[in-house]
Length: 84
Image 1 (tube, rainbow, N blue to C red):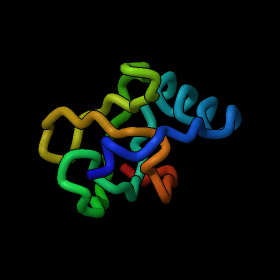
Image 2: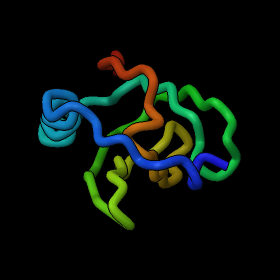
Image 3: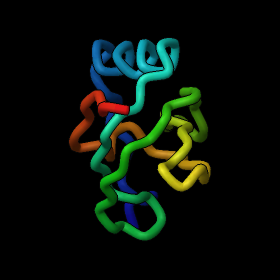
C-alpha cells in the first residue's frame, strides 16, 4: 500500500500554490493515487487546509460530492485550477 511508501517532500513552490488556492477558494482538478486503496483518483476538489501527520503532508479538501478528502501531497501527480 502507498502508506508504506516513504514520504517524499514536495517542492516549496507547489506547496505555496496549494496555500494560494486555499486562500482564494479556488477549485482544483487533481489526479492522485489514494493512500489507502492505491487506486488513481481524478476529481475537482475545494482545498481547505494543509496538515502534517506522521511526517507526511496532506491536503484537506471537499470533493465534488461534498465529502471530505485527505490527500497525501507527494501522491498528487497532476493539479490544475478548475473552472467553477
